[in-house]
Image 1 (cartoon, rainbow, N blue to C red):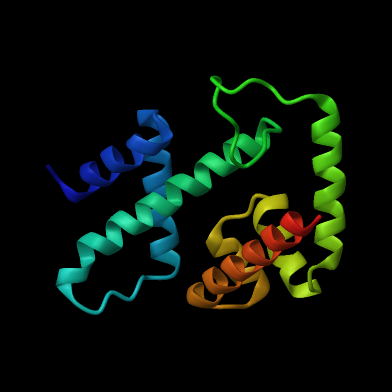
Image 2: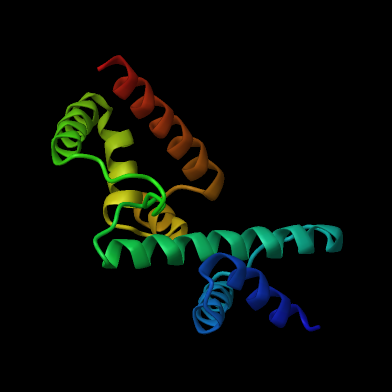
Length: 151
């Protein structure tokens, strides 16, 4: 099996649609043509490919959910729907917690989740490296979770 076919099959595990999996991989390869990845040794290429395809698939899923107006991680059908009051309460708690974040954290979260931009698009817009993006995103989510627990 060729590497391209493996990448499509791997993406298909996440997006559960062969045409969408091909779109994910084609989009990823297109971004690599614009900005070639720097892989230091041949042994790392498999891990790099798997990680890249995984992140591209997750970005695709987030965009699809955003287009349908769903939350980034929609609940499963097995869970009972929450009452409308809970959603209103959660939204107000979230809004209050977001105000308490630093402007930098708020911008990062709004760019990534609110606008459903890919990691690469966020990095470009914010002018930061991939490592800095993931580190800041982790910190911002952790800080937001702490603020939500306190309320």
